[in-house]
Length: 419
Image (cartoon, rainbow, N blue to C red):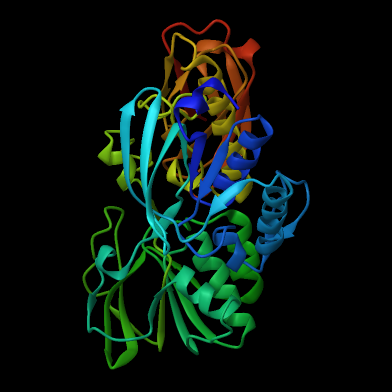
């Protein structure tokens, strides 16, 4: 037990029991920190539990696993370490008492309690956008679901939501569910994407749509839903580069099910209430290379930090946050460093982390603003270029920079995509 734990109940409390939270909790426990994981749901494991398709663990475990297989490996590790966790644990409030003490108010079916901790790893993930957030109007009818809801119905509960399906948005979950519906015999009328390009991973566009001849309609938006009792049709329109409707392009598509795959929004409300600084592009917190926020001892990992393409990245971020928590507990701070900012250059939408010390290896996560081919990822201050055959907003860019690359940093580091 650390000296800090004599003052607080725990060295670190992980909020969120998905891949980032479990990986972070496991690593913290292995570091010798007294650790607690709080999960709002009735089980740990997170979203991958309902993802029966493969594509998980290629980087983290160097194996191609299904979602449940990936989560179960983390759960088995949690149990082998006898790592303390609580399910059905709703965090209602976080109080930043001081740099060295955080207080968390938790409700469970049994009781309400206040927990004190030296550090927090915030790994609450993200939620799907709902109909009222998409700009789609029309009748209030049944048959409209988020992609995650249809995934739960089909893969967990064994329920077929509908037979004639329109997918709104080309996010990865939507592409995967388009394939899932098609394999179950549904007529997938098409995937409607208002942008001029798909937003999901290239491999998912290929494997989920092209391989099954499911139509992808880019530059077309769903404007209205119509029906009596249940959805009967959607009205779609072509949109221009400014996403404005092009007159005379309305088209009706008959369907009994609409699936929304219009993006994810990080769960950050509790962080905002303690004045954590947010990045307007990621909608997640601003962090340094240990994934520590501007509030000392509060770290973020996984989809609450930035929407990741791969669960592997979320787990890696959980481990990095745990390393930061260990350093914080041992030193009662992250030892003083001259943090330098990472600046967004040409065709870069966001960069995470936002600050570097230049003293250690770092993984940089980023996305391009628009698709380009035959490009280079350029860091002009350190003279580093990485060739890429292409960049797309739907494909996260992950770059590894070594301490030797960053040793000469002084005023900042710019990341840009150049031709």
